[in-house]
Length: 77
Image 1 (cartoon, rainbow, N blue to C red):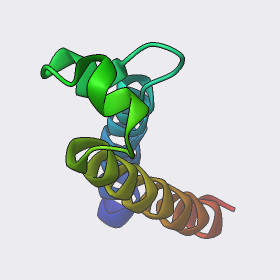
Image 2 (tube, helix red, strand yellow):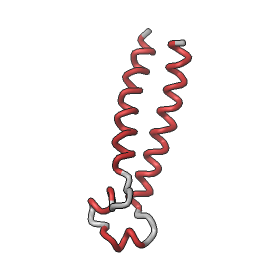
Image 3 (spheres, one colour):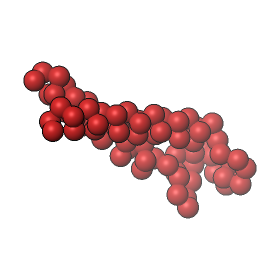
Protein backbone atom coordinates (compact mmCIF):
# COMPACT_ATOMS: atom_id res chain seq x y z
CA UNK A 1 0.00 0.00 0.00
CA UNK A 2 2.82 2.42 0.87
CA UNK A 3 4.63 1.53 -2.36
CA UNK A 4 1.52 2.49 -4.34
CA UNK A 5 1.32 5.91 -2.70
CA UNK A 6 5.04 6.50 -3.24
CA UNK A 7 4.63 5.53 -6.90
CA UNK A 8 1.72 7.95 -7.26
CA UNK A 9 3.78 10.76 -5.72
CA UNK A 10 6.70 9.96 -8.04
CA UNK A 11 4.28 9.90 -11.00
CA UNK A 12 3.02 13.40 -10.16
CA UNK A 13 6.57 14.76 -9.91
CA UNK A 14 7.56 13.06 -13.18
CA UNK A 15 4.48 14.42 -14.91
CA UNK A 16 5.17 18.01 -13.88
CA UNK A 17 8.87 17.67 -14.73
CA UNK A 18 8.08 16.22 -18.16
CA UNK A 19 5.62 18.99 -19.01
CA UNK A 20 8.09 21.69 -17.97
CA UNK A 21 10.99 20.13 -19.86
CA UNK A 22 8.89 19.79 -23.03
CA UNK A 23 7.78 23.41 -22.77
CA UNK A 24 11.42 24.53 -22.47
CA UNK A 25 12.27 23.08 -25.89
CA UNK A 26 12.64 25.52 -28.73
CA UNK A 27 9.97 25.68 -31.38
CA UNK A 28 10.18 28.17 -34.20
CA UNK A 29 11.54 30.71 -31.72
CA UNK A 30 14.70 30.35 -29.72
CA UNK A 31 13.35 28.53 -26.67
CA UNK A 32 15.77 27.78 -23.88
CA UNK A 33 18.89 28.54 -25.90
CA UNK A 34 17.67 32.04 -26.75
CA UNK A 35 16.77 32.67 -23.12
CA UNK A 36 20.43 32.17 -22.21
CA UNK A 37 21.76 34.41 -24.98
CA UNK A 38 21.90 31.97 -27.90
CA UNK A 39 20.26 34.31 -30.40
CA UNK A 40 20.23 33.76 -34.14
CA UNK A 41 23.87 32.76 -34.42
CA UNK A 42 23.46 29.54 -32.48
CA UNK A 43 20.06 28.86 -34.08
CA UNK A 44 21.71 28.81 -37.51
CA UNK A 45 24.42 26.48 -36.25
CA UNK A 46 23.87 23.05 -34.75
CA UNK A 47 21.95 22.64 -31.51
CA UNK A 48 23.64 24.02 -28.43
CA UNK A 49 24.96 22.05 -25.49
CA UNK A 50 22.07 23.27 -23.35
CA UNK A 51 19.50 21.97 -25.84
CA UNK A 52 21.26 18.62 -26.21
CA UNK A 53 21.31 18.22 -22.42
CA UNK A 54 17.65 19.24 -22.28
CA UNK A 55 16.90 16.59 -24.91
CA UNK A 56 18.66 13.94 -22.84
CA UNK A 57 16.87 15.03 -19.66
CA UNK A 58 13.50 14.93 -21.41
CA UNK A 59 14.11 11.44 -22.80
CA UNK A 60 15.24 10.10 -19.41
CA UNK A 61 12.21 11.67 -17.72
CA UNK A 62 9.88 10.20 -20.36
CA UNK A 63 11.38 6.71 -19.89
CA UNK A 64 11.00 6.99 -16.11
CA UNK A 65 7.41 8.21 -16.60
CA UNK A 66 6.60 5.21 -18.80
CA UNK A 67 8.25 2.77 -16.42
CA UNK A 68 6.42 4.22 -13.43
CA UNK A 69 3.12 4.15 -15.35
CA UNK A 70 3.64 0.44 -16.01
CA UNK A 71 4.36 -0.23 -12.34
CA UNK A 72 1.24 1.68 -11.31
CA UNK A 73 -0.87 -0.23 -13.85
CA UNK A 74 0.36 -3.53 -12.44
CA UNK A 75 -0.11 -2.46 -8.81
CA UNK A 76 -3.57 -0.94 -9.28
CA UNK A 77 -4.82 -3.36 -11.90
